Amino acid sequence: MTSKRIHFGHQATVPAIGQGTWYMGESRSQRATEVAALRAGVEQGLTLIDTAEMYADGGAEEVVGDALKGIRDQVFLVSKVYPWNAGGKKAIAACEASLRRLGTDHLDLYLLHWRGNYSLAETVDVMETLIAQGKIARWGVSNLDIDDMHELWQVDGGRQCATNQVLYHLASRGIEYDLLPWCQQQSLPVMAYCPLAQAGRLRNGLMNNATVLDIAHAHNASAAQILLAWVITHQGVMAIPKASSVEHVKENAAALNITLSADELAKLDRVFPAPQRKMPLDVV
Image (cartoon, rainbow, N blue to C red; front, side, top):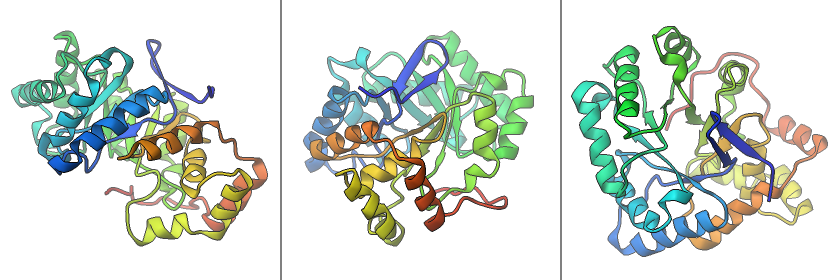
């Protein structure tokens, strides 16, 4: 097995590719397929599963709950709270509702999905309360840019943050200018969502890019595997692609064992250059 692993503090280490669940739980007819894919992912070693109360209005959490039956102790479970639920009693209630849908008594990691009207101090305070209650093991944030992170670091207890989950892929490299280096300096893991880009023209452009396809051919791999391998080349970065079939999950897991050469990375840089200035944080 690969040595590409991400450390969430001393107690938890996970492979650098996990499983996302955005758009799962939206169709009852897909439930069995989605559950099978998640369980196959765990069998393949993709033991981090990321979900959110937002996804399919809790439907994705219910799918994950089905997938976790009998294997909860093998999984590093992540969910996210809406910003308007991210303080006080609302946060406690939201977390408890997520736990019910997931069929578990605790989350390994609970994230603020994006910033809202609650202050960071209020969110940190209730996250620490949830830890004290045993409902979560650690907390983090999502979609926070460099200024937000600086602000969080000034909040009492803010440095207990375990991760920042942001959009990141080969065609969206804005975080490399300032946010990613800062996170690396703090030894703060970054979770890359949409590591293959969203569906549509951008994704098609990445998947069909001649340079990406050439490198894929050299590794006897798919374009998607090369894109995942590129994301996790970066120190402290893990990717959480969604895979809704067993076949896809196996393909994602195999990307852990692809190592891109310096020459291949340079070729990708030429086609998809790193940012030379501050870019707005990409959010989907």
